[in-house]
Length: 332
Image (cartoon, rainbow, N blue to C red; front, side, top):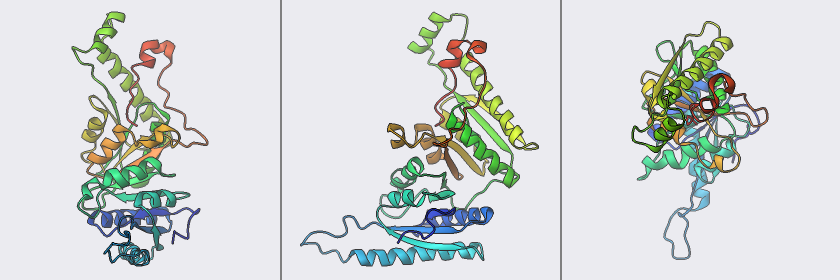
């Protein structure tokens, strides 16, 4: 069965009885209590390949798989109620792949929570096959929980958000501000710029066109403007919120991860759900989800009322080349 709360606000968490899933249930239970929402613990019975042809010797049949899925989901709900007594935690068992089921359950949900590892010999690949797929296709924000304990932001654990001036980054910033404010945590705004190869064609081309402007300095300046504009928006949205910025040159995912060593939550933007973009989480968001040591919240801009990008400067103020090619990008 699917969750009876479909279409109503709720927190959804995937559960398969693995250690990672237990941590995810703990985080999701805390989140449901924080938001005052019911929690739906979902387990998918995916028996593809378990039921064979006439010569199959598999003891598994669909009914058995669904019954077992129900028991697993109910155990997850019990864990949530043990962690947060009085919490409205419901079990939901469905037939299908875990990724597909969780995407379906995300319709109308406040957030979907998934662990980063699961059961089986290929458990290490679960992040790519389930968590990243859900993060890329879900209809709501997705939290991928990492580590052995359900970390959360607080006074000693900042919320880290990656920005690049895009609409998705603007949506991520607003979510990060809300999370930091609710938890009494500081906000760390991070923006990366890509260093040019001293021997690369792109640097040579730039210098041939703009001999008096160093491309790395131009990119760094643009990144500083994006970070400063994001910090200003954060302070406007939440007066009194402690906000700091970090701007570094390097691989954007590595820059965000370096800034998140003490974080309780990392927030990144994701591409929209339409067209080819929805087939991928995005190289940087994917890298952050894979490498973070704390939960990662993946947010995308609304499709009905697009979030405005973070305004930094006009093309006339910065110059056409600066405003176009060298605005930081790639944090999606």
